[in-house]
Image (tube, rainbow, N blue to C red; front, side, top):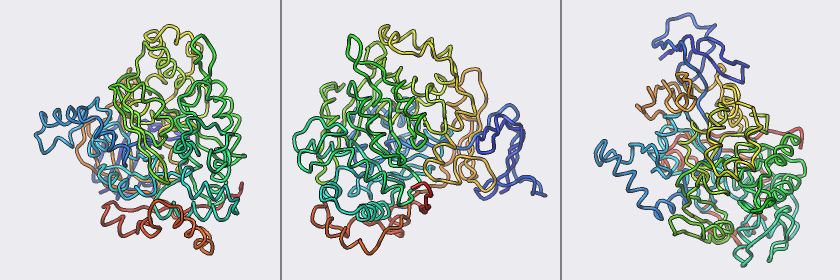
Length: 563
């Protein structure tokens, strides 16, 4: 059906539109050039006084896979509360689908609904281990109405560490990376605490960027160097997605700067960078390193970041970084945790936690995240995340957007946190307020370009008709918390902030070219040191489409002139 959205205020950085009044036309899930249409629309919506943006994209949110399910098993009381509320509203059969607004650990069906009800239409799981790829994709397929995909974890597997130790040619490593991304139907490559998870298994409790692994002798810098090079030489659109060393540790700003240097000029994405921007100054030996990180990012055009903002309240932290999670388990609230060794591949740690605004460290973490958002004055390279659920639930995004757009609201919030932490931040001196165009870049076009998804994140003709329409309010949190309409691939799925239809489900993956003549050498390495038989890793296209149940949109790599 041909649909026309009339008189909306359009915010689309791809077309340099900053509130221009205009019309949008779409049909069959695709945005059309309205100047070439010579017939009446089947449906029309008058959007006078409304803001129109592309559907939101979350490039880093933990919504599928083993660690999420471990968290659900560790915290059944949280799950029971969400399900009881859903059952009370719509009966027992609808409990899994009914969103609990304050839930930080919703079941998979709720995840899709809550994202859609904020105007988000695409979300990506950033930590998929190769042996768990089937389960991750299956759970993402149970997340209704969203475009999804996942990044495969490397950097702590014995195969790669042995290859680096043996100084094999880079072509071998490129073949291994390319085969694994294609075989697991991933969209990119993720590194979590390069070498550190493996070192933890050898009883190491700390591994900095330039420290040798206790068994293999390679450093995290070595791992980052070969993987950033592999990603660039293979033409993978997304840069290497890096969870840096020493997450959450005072003084780790030095490790983060060394991580940027280790990439040797290749593209690199620093994820949840707030957790990696800590100094060790002051009476409590904990301070902000945000300004140093912001300067380094702005001086390095090959670097992108997402912030991983913390939000006050109860949550659960979950990560493949078992080294860090073991350290943080003593701060668990409630006092229980899971630390899991995944042989030959990675690890997993699940630790519930409560961030408190009157606790110095938590309050300063909150301030550091906002400093990064405000100091990195390039919204095309800094993306809005809370590292859901590690820093806080994704449902807090409208509140976070208000903090960035409204200085007076931010200063009111600053006055309510621990006084020493407030004095230790530079937030009072930061007058910047995000514009609507910058919000659209940071939450729409920027992530789409970062991921190499050419048809998402914008409102240009030929793009996917994922569209969020908001009623403008004096309160930006209210504006972004309850869209008037959300269209998902051309279908109306949300009206007045309430989910009405799931829309299409699409899974994105990447087809990576690699040197097939080297594949036998890589196979022998994998058969010798891998966790499972080689033949069990690859997921066929028919299996993705039929058994896992999501249509597959496969993307191709591009040749890079700057390699």
